[in-house]
Image 1 (cartoon, rainbow, N blue to C red):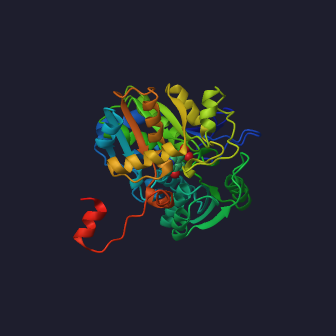
Image 2: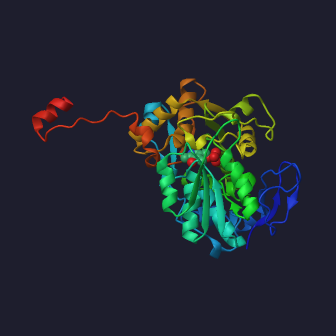
Image 3: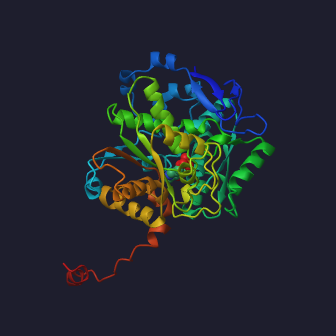
Length: 418
Ligand SMILES: *Cc1c(COP(=O)(O)O)cnc(C)c1O
């Protein structure tokens, strides 16, 4: 049984029957993401704080709020239920009172992308499709490859040639068929172009972590918001700093925060601050210039150490920009130095080793604290969305190699100045 009532295109207002399986809006010239709508009055009858609190924390603990009808179709690797760490040392170093870190590096494939992918692959399973494909700089592809391995499905991954080999090795081992594509430039994403063409030619199901190719992707990150609210014992952070590439992470979470308000489980919502890398910040530009949510201008030449955020066009940018505006948040860009500094601080003060894309929200927080635009007495949420082990090159380039000495106490004293 599912609580989905309809599939709806927010751009041209076309409705679709949830029993049909459109991948994106089929109205000529539209092609936007289709949004999934639920029956909240029925959901209110079956979900309460008590019922939810009695369940263990995981993505599928929120089954009723997800678009899969039959639990038997779930393809899971034990995703979600990640720790919400109350920061001590980092909070002190930054001079803030209440800082929480959602540690998404602990997911089965070490990034939050396991949330959209468990939903996408489960839904594909329910619809009876067994070949899926992704266009990704790495984490989404790795997650899709792992869930396809779990289900015994075929997985095709189109990745940009700038993706680190650590990430590519991971998806090859999961058994995915990987193609690296040249040329991420001029606002055109070759991985997405080939994804679209190959899926329509061969009938594969696109599952690229963002919405316009698969309506179920943004449903996964909703569960991040649900978990955070439960972990804060039904309190809401004042503000969330969220890194943005395609926008599904931020936009999906906003849906989650909105769901719990609609269900009467909480009374407020956080301000959502979108943080992008300054080398690829089309959403920030759209926010600053007050553009229509469906008229975001792509970034001509994305470049950043946060390569997981280098989407020239934010495919779920409409959802993310709407979230930023509705929540009275904002959108800011941070440069690579600030991102790398944030990576170091998170590791050094909290013991969390995250990749640059996964700490860009923290870099944004530091930036706002420094400029005086963030009140340090608020309850602040950041999210470490991807593990650092996948892209060690970026760290190795910056460290000084430790000295080699004889195993001798005198030499040790001399070397370390003890
Ligand atoms: C994909 C990704 C993001 C951004 O998510 P979007 O939904 O593309 O905005 C952030 N952090 C990491 C580690 C990612 O892999």
